[in-house]
Length: 381
Image 1 (cartoon, rainbow, N blue to C red):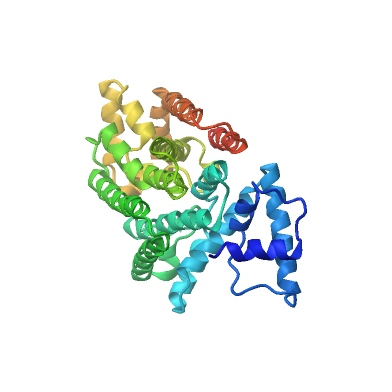
Image 2 (image 1 turned 30 degrees about the vertical axis):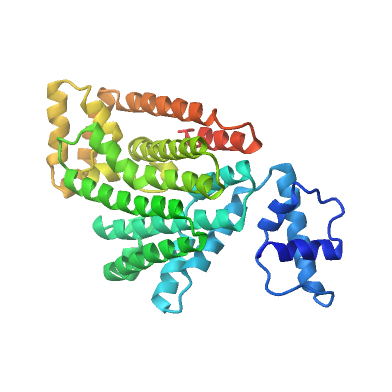
């Protein structure tokens, strides 16, 4: 098997006298596959293994696997999965990797992996598949939204063209799903095909309710689950399934991922109005696009009739009018008058407490603490 060769090489050359049995399987799993037997004449290869293993061993013993390392390994797996000789696809893959953002989904998924039995190449691969599906959905979103920028940078549509990014996104969806065959696990295939379905349904719902004042909170929650919550859920649930955790643990991981993803999107919707600098994008994008998001829905349902009618009038304006600075200033004044910021923060805090209570059900582990720290850091808004 793939993992036996590095282990055999380590023992043959006496690489680690200090290597303990409980760390060996995790250590070997963290190393890249090696083709062929390692013999004494291949000293350079063994030296590389020794260096990699010492680094991995120290990180595993200390529990100090850095986020940067997770991002790096996930990006490497993305490139490996999406590799193609067609120039336009190679350019799109490079674009996707370089604009990958913080890769919160990958980091949280790998935290779960380390908490259960250690981060392996397979854990990075599952994380990479999630990120590929996310990236493909963003390429499609830029075309649907006619967006020239994303996070303050030129969008894929702007760089490559609408047709190219639509087809490139399709290629990424298909390639991600095909790579799941390597795991020979129907349960994994099921949750990943589910997430693509959920993404499509959510995008259709968002189009249906764009600029429509009759959108309900339930509709909004359906949309953010499909577009964001389902991806986080699949990342956490996929790791638990692959590592053969109990049904109760798999369910718990899925619930944590789902709520984390939805909180992540609610936070973004809040920041769009009240602190967009943390998003690295221009403010009020949702208002300009006519989207009824969390701050608007919460305050709308608490407004008196006169203020509610005024709120809806703003959303009935043409896009150009909603981008007018004076219009935006008056609109923000209406939100401030009705304490939209405070109401939204209270809702986010409630969701954060609920999420932390779910995480509290996980077994004690340094990486459980890291998950909690990531969430608290996320909510410093």
